[in-house]
Length: 104
Image (cartoon, rainbow, N blue to C red; front, side, top):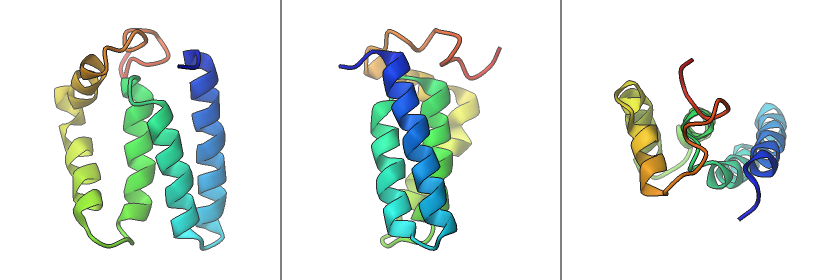
């Protein structure tokens, strides 16, 4: 697995590409970029949350609606620590770092 800083930078780049694709009316391409970014940061609660915020924007337009509902549910459960639990599941070594904590 790549070092976290490298994965985070890759996710940021993919998010920028996804944002550009979405702005140019290409939601399927944006979805691919956002999904690739998501897969880079599932062990980091803060960035994983951001991944689902971005994915939710495009999954709303896709079918079936299951992905949109999943994104919405995860975002609603974020204050209860769902992203921290997911990081535990992935045996994250970065979840407690300053870059990954959702709150200060």
